[in-house]
Every structure is written in structure tokens, then in C-alpha cells.
Image (cartoon, rainbow, N blue to C red; front, top):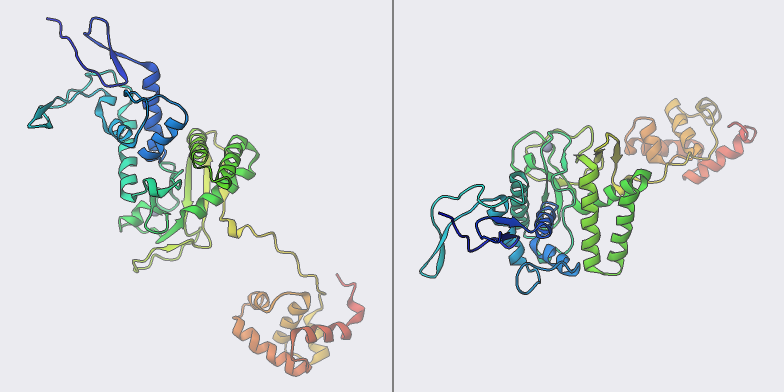
Length: 371
Ligand SMILES: [Zn+2]
């Protein structure tokens, strides 16, 4: 007996004799695209908005996409070929019997389907739907912890951050630090933007920044999606060291601190190339060498009757180092260095750093060309 089929998911059609399914390849492609967007961290609302903006026709009669259509599709196991019989009982659709695998031609593989479910759960947990605006995690599934290799999670309460999943689960020995998402993203963008091999990414980044500037929200979404796709294609993984190479010993305090100054990340590209990146704040221009004169401590000790330590400190100050830098150089705390400085003032009768330097300059004119 030939079984006649009456109904098919919207991306499939029926053969003329209605005994088998046929795949609308263009629609199947859209389904796959929607799953990819979800895995890339975009919510159902954003995906619908983008498809409409791009003029991709919906599968329903209205030809428009909305949040619930997208959500239904992302959770519909018919995409992986499964059939689930349902009956309407007292007005409610109720599941009847076991699901039947391989009933429909699958348009999504099981791994992709699972990844989309994980992404959806993460999205729900973060409640970053419409209100989340355009802050989405571009690094979903590619960022892992430098210390334990576990996934870096996109965590949001009032300040979105990337945190090692071990830390979030309250286990593991990872440093209890998070990297503020925006800060990480900026650092990441800067790093890729500076690398000549990432020109495609730089172009998308430029479009993104322009769209942000013009307050063009669909443009922002579009550019972020493009960046996500480039990343997914060209990057094998990103390891994130939230607390640098020498993290402080894990404390028993529960608090998770943000943005350790030593933080950095490593990007590994699919072709084996790798890049290292640091937060924007640390990208200060290289410190220029102090331009003062170098006068030997022995000379200073002799001229002004200073102790060897006082002479050493004076020498650094005359070279143009700050008292803080000087303290670091001689291995003292700033307080100790200040204590010495008072004694230096007393012995040279100067009472201020500029006066001290002036005095030394006048006392050692012949050493001007010393450097
Ligand atoms: Zn970790």
C-alpha cells in the first residue's frame, strides 16, 4: 500500500505522487543560515530582523520573518529529519508516541542542531533579547580558557563579561577573574585590525564602526554577522588569559574580579598563524628614555656628602626618572624613597626636586656631554 503524505515542514515539499519529500534547496539554505546565526550568538529577534532587512522571503503566507517563527524553526527536530506525531486533544497539541528518526530529509546535522540549542539556552540565560541591543558574543564557541581549556562563557548581569566556565561552575583552580566583554572585543578588534593578513576583517570592522557612528542598527547587526562569519571561517581558536601568565593564587573569596592588568589573549588561525593581543589600555606608546644627564652616584656622593643610597637616588632623579620609578629601580617602596629624598633635600639644602636638579646641573657643568 502506498502511503500518501499530506503535510511537510515549510522547507520541504512533496513529490508529485505525494509519497516522498523533496527538499527546496534554497529554503534549506536559509534554514542552515538561521542555525548558523543562532550559533554565532544572535537571538531570534535579531535574526528575523536581519532576514527581513535583507529581503529574504519568509516561508509562511506573510513572507515576513518574526521571532516566534525563528524560535520554532531552531527548536524543530524535523530539521534533523525527526518526525514526532502530535494529536490535538481538547484543543491542545499533544505528543503521541516515540519520535521517528530519518523520516524527513535532514537539512541540519545533529551537531549543528545541538550547538544551536546550547546557544539558545545561553541566550535565554542571559536574557539578552531585544534589550540586549547589539551586544552579542562574537566569540561563542571559539574562545577558551588559557588555564584550563574550558569554554569562555558570555556572562551578563549588569556588565557583560567573558568568564571561564569552570569559574562559573564554582569548581576548578582557575583565577577568579573576568574580562569585560566590551574591553575584550575592543582589544580583539584592534589586534586583528593591525594585522595585514586580516584585511577582510578590517573592512567589516570599518563598516561596523561606521554603522555604530550613524546609529544604523541593521547596519551594525549586518556588520557583526559578517565579522562573526569571517572569524568562524578563519580562526581555529582563541585562548583567553584573564589574569596574565602569572595569575594570583586562587583566593577562597567568591568575588570574581574584572580586567586584571596582565590579561591577554592568543588567536590561532586555521592556517597555523597566530597573534597575541592585549587590552587597549596597555597599548601606551613605548616609554621614552628620560633625557636628563647621567651623573655617577660616586660623583654626587663626593660633591654633596650623600650616602651611597642617597647618591643613587639623586642620580636617577637627575636623569629624569620620577620618584616612583626611582623607588622601583632601587627596589624600595615609594615611602622609603621619599624618606631618603627628605634627607637628600636636607643635606643639599634644596627642599624640592627641581631645585635639587638645578643644583646638580650647576655643580657638574662639564659633564653635559657625558651621554
Ligand atoms: Zn579556566
